[in-house]
Length: 314
Ligand code: 13P
Ligand code: SF4
Picture 1 (cartoon, helix red, strand yellow):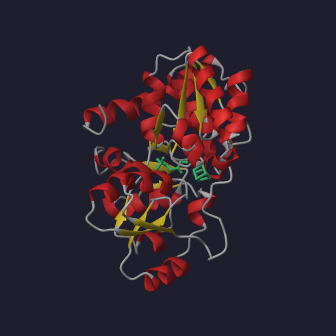
Picture 2 (tube, rainbow, N blue to C red):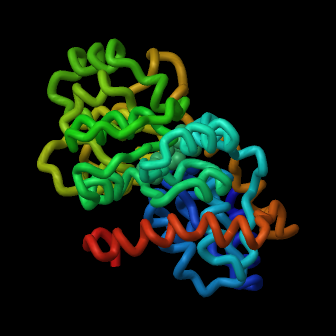
């Protein structure tokens, strides 16, 4: 059944000169048919660079928006319009505008996991793959608002010695992981090294051997001589970790032994059937007005330019 769907998806992709971009949090079957798989930073670059006529973005809504903003002449579609993000939702436009306006001397750095409207209120966008270097490239005395993820912002404050003002948003997947459960697993699996995404809260991060973006964790595990890892992030990453390291062992950290709570409910809305439907119908299109695109584009382009000049991307 899946093989028929996959054949049809490949045929339609060719016919329509479409590119399928997928985040590492997608189900394994979608990761395996993607033309390009990456974390938020890689995917933003791929969306900007593509020559395809149609971009099918398998991730969540804000990622589709980012692709449209960076490449507005292309048609961008996503398989399920309900694929949102708790972190993006935790930062409503009016509230954030009032917060920003109350701090006019502050530069606004927003994590890419936010709506296009929030991007228009931001000076620089960052991802977990470049946040540290972007923040470090700014003068120490520069006042900064960091939004919307308080965990990533808190982590950056701790390692840079800054005092950025933080918006109180969280990712529901990473926020649910607790130090108690993580510690329990560490005691149970003593020879496993903990790797964690900076969207986890501080008490989990304190237990980690390595902290980094999705791509950084994948790179770290590949280069590490260690063979066993506890993984504190969304479950989808394990597919790539296993592919790259068939002889290494991975245990995902969850809130308790029984739950699948580190599956992002939004990322996992996308299925092969929906990908096929999306290619057949060219639904659901990301439509943004020109003014919004123009304003939201500036801080994203600034991020890409700064990342290039810092040697983080090509
Ligand atoms: P990265 O892709 O930057 O690691 O972010 C993880 C995430 O939560 C994406 O929704
Ligand atoms: Fe949003 Fe968290 Fe899901 Fe990423 S994993 S899309 S930040 S809810």
